[in-house]
Length: 317
Length: 60
Image 1 (cartoon, rainbow over the protein chains, first blue to last red):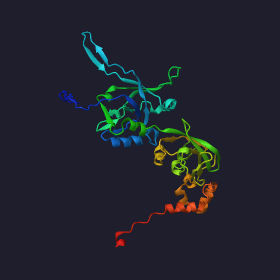
Image 2: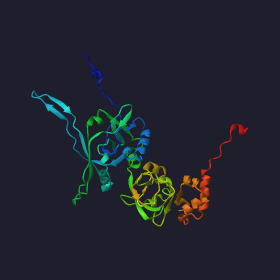
Image 3: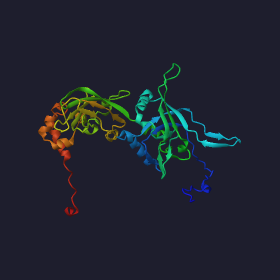
Image 4: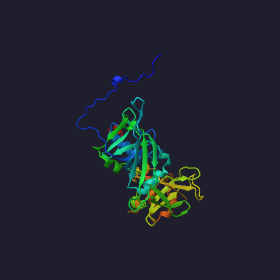
């Protein structure tokens, strides 16, 4: 009988145990970045990785976006390794116990919890771990690539109420098979390139922006007000000039989804909003109420206009 | 903030339409842009292709 799929010789399966003065040690997790399934990054270059991450968190397509969450380990309920004891007293290892961490955040509070609960599609997405000492930890994808860690479970825990002695708790639970971050670990060390500070300052989640009616629609002219969904900051106060640009908006006809042409966008100081003027001669334009779906351009497009860190909702007019 | 900074016109749309159409389309913005005709002209100017660099032969 021929032997197929011969494994690497056991003679080669040794790791040398020497180490230098500067050895790798991981500090506590300080957050995670949920990444798209199949995402990989170049683990050989911090600069390349920074560029990739900065593009990832503002990707226009939600399913292709990275979602960072900064949180600390509230509790470690990781499973012990599983062993079998035989009648003769011998013991053999059956499998590794899974990691099982509960992460808790303070900044972001319920706003962040609510966003994560809403992100049903992001459950069981791969994730990268950010450590306090500025390492980005993932799984080895071969060819010097780092991939997300595939979870067995990501659960956004329900809010725990303030009981008079303790603040309300917002937490999530992540569980994963440990070989991904042990034998098959891949990590990129950012400690000499900003460390954790880089992540916290440059790799932030987007804020949702609600588009509200500023005044009743008058034919092809619509007035809107933009406010962040959590915290209700009026974006006119921050980006009156930047958002007074047709490129910052992406309105569509409601019934078809076809793009509509804007001929101008103007800031309106009276309502702290914007006046959108549509091209009534656009074949996709119709005067029927509800057929104008007002949307902002995608986050990457907005970032190109110096409106960084926002994603708009929609408004029917 | 200057008024000119608070309105952004579509250059593409302006290029495809006459001054009269442009003025008609944005007449509700007269408070913000007093001379819409001049604004249209400025937008047309921005659309003009830049002068091509003289060729080596021309330089000689």
